[in-house]
Amino acid sequence: MPSDHAQFMGFIAIFSILTYRFLQHQRPQLILPPKIALTIPLSVALFVCYSRYAIGVHSLEQVLVGFVVGVIFAFFWYFLGAILYPSYSGRLESILHRKID
Image (cartoon, rainbow, N blue to C red):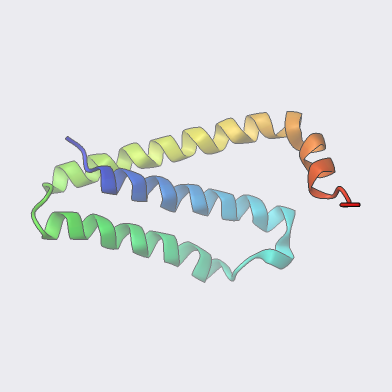
């Protein structure tokens, strides 16, 4: 069985990097420096993946397969959201910028 922890961390790391790249173009004033924004999720993901292997819970192959599955799902969900985003962008903008009376 692939490592669930590696799968989750692969998903979170790649999805957060893809989201960072998207937000970098949408709202540059809210963005961390690129080196920090890319290093943190990858470092945490690699640490968790290594820990699963180091403590002997999973083999190297299980960790690698789990990480790759997580990366594939991250790309899938990110691009699905990117395809759906234009149809919802008008409604989201009106909700986000609505004044509360």
